[in-house]
Amino acid sequence: EPCTSTEGPGEERDESWICVGSARSFGARTTLSIHNRIVLLLRENSKWHCLDAICYHAGGPLSQAAVERVDNRVCLRCPWHSYLIDIEDGHGLYMDLSRRYRSKGARQRVHKVRQDGGQLFVQLCARAESVASDEYAFGAQLPPQVLR
Ligand code: FES
Image 1 (cartoon, rainbow, N blue to C red):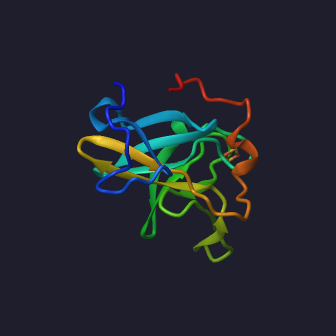
Image 2 (cartoon, rainbow, N blue to C red):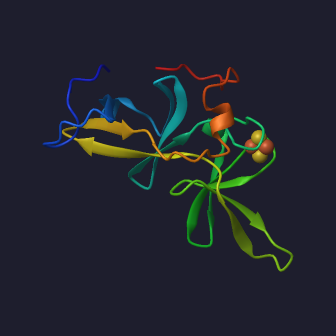
């Protein structure tokens, strides 16, 4: 469904917010190309999230990852080598020797999503320091979904 808004959400005229289309037109997971960046838009517990679609470790397709709750975090478990990625902050998690989950810090770039008037808007993360997932964000290893 085409986007009907030409402005940012709410009163803002902020071009960093990109209208990606009607919220109703998206399923639980959609892979999108925004300014050539491959991102995954996902709905989890009625909340929208957006993060780089290709796993920072070796390019696995997070569109096919299972959702797992780890401690208080909601994570994607990459289908390729089972790495855990928090969908809120993009932290990579690992289990330490005492079998506690620990964070390796931000590994997957996470973008903001807002819904306004039925439309979804994404603001790509502008953080200047590189994040491990940047390596694959513009790459050719795309998951087998239709990009829009
Ligand atoms: Fe995702 Fe290896 S590519 S865990």
